[in-house]
Image (cartoon, rainbow, N blue to C red):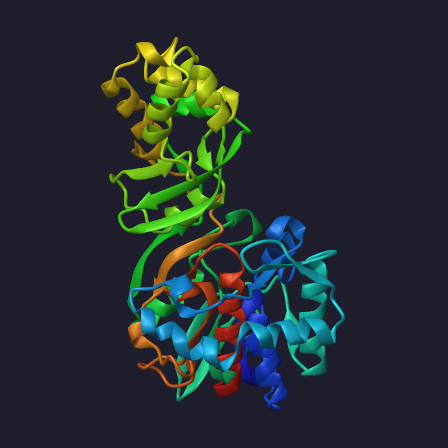
Length: 393
């Protein structure tokens, strides 16, 4: 005996709740299930507990996908302004931190409660600690089985998220469902994640742990100018997290430790105007002293600037403006904010998020091969893709 619904949604995160609300509003009988003990936990812990829930600059070029055009439809059907209006309706106070990033003034829990309230108003049934044994399809019905019960529905939405932050229940379950229904998975990798380095650079990072500098970090033609943080494991901070989504194992990245200055030009001018000045004093004016000491030591420069050759000044300036380093890897899914890759979007409808292979099967949110930049874009993808699936499921 199976319990019948119109729509079953697997995964009660941002995308799953959004799709449940929208399907429920259409009068659909909706069941939203999650294997974790808390609903919306990734929302609650995000943004240091304040939840960077969207970005006012959201547009398709802030996302990575093997199929970049796919993102356009969902983002235009449900925009950042639509979500901001929902937040305002619930009188949740928020602020722009920087670069269009919007955060709650008080707590991310307000967003979880708002979504739960919307689910309640849309008559959505929510079951947590819900352990699925099997997902199958029989006679145009999707069957979701646990140890004791069977649930069937006309539509199935997979909103299981990616592999990032396993401590709050992230698993590969969504990819396994996709494969079962003949969908291709674009290789998954940790994204928006700190980078790790070999012993020499790691030693330097350990000495500078906790120091943050404004830097331009680039890989090939992609660059980000934001804060960079030295840690006891390597490099982190927004500019590093951003580039990690683009960086390829084995390749170098470049770091400009002084984005506003042409260091070689500055050093030449200083040598003419004040030849007796100590090189360490000049570099300490450009960057924090701890970092300046290491940079000078690594480049074997010291003493009066007049005593240093053009070649030495050029090497020093290159290592400040274009410090080229080779990451050994990343910190992995444990600290990654999102997962790169996922269900191949070429096998989904961009208008509805429905599978091109199985009618009424939908994939939304992070499980899909769409990854946003840092700064609220991944939440906006969850709201937009969830909204779209909810209109059609």
